[in-house]
Amino acid sequence: MAIPVKRIGMWASPRCLSTVLLRSWSNRPDTFVQDEPLYPHYLVVSGRQDPGREAVLKHYETDWVKIVEQLIHGEIPNPKSIYYQKFMVYRLLPHIDIDWISGLTNCFLIREPRQMLLSYLKLWPNPTVETLGILRLHKLFYTVRDSLGTIPPVIDAQDLQKNPRHTLSLLCEAIGVEFTEEMLHWPKGNPTDDIWSQYQWYDTVRNSTEFKPDTPKTDPIPAQFSDLLLQCNEVYQDLYQYRLV
Image (cartoon, rainbow, N blue to C red):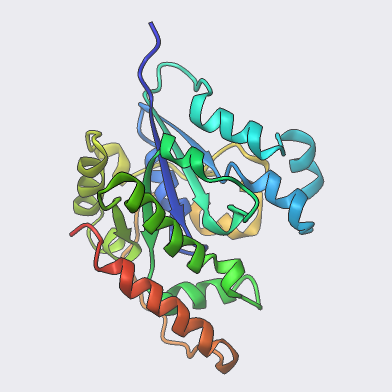
């Protein structure tokens, strides 16, 4: 008899600790995690020349319809009962039909925009509304809320860093799974076996073993990104009111 599977979709913008959170879930013995399942399709459509691009395109499915079929209906390694899927929201491109997300238990991860942008700028010099996906995240939250008639779980990265046990317990309760102590610590290593796990933007995650306390960055945001910061702040403040506390 097949084990009933809880399929969780965690939606976030870049540099919001989403991969550290993935690492936390991956340490649960009952959970199979998948990192950015829409990434291969995004590479094809965007033409981005990310490190390992050719290897990724050769190894993974790139048809979004087939990817979604696996996410919603596909089998996962037994005896796992939780299928945790981490999504960078900007990879949910406009041509991708989103009706399928109703097959997931959708959650949202947010981070204070100044901290998010400063972290982003260390790796990529030209953030935009599109590459952050912040407006897409905002719209998706309300799409899920309106379709469910209830508020989907929202957690804040700073809360995760300040009190991971409390925040993860609230999240688990909200989505109907039991919190486990394994979520608080994990061994060093790649977050998954995916090809892109070996590249530079996962260095911090590879060396992590737990959620680290927040050390706020105080560098100024370059003036050319002031409007972007304003837009991000507007979305953040709106979603922040719904966070689990």
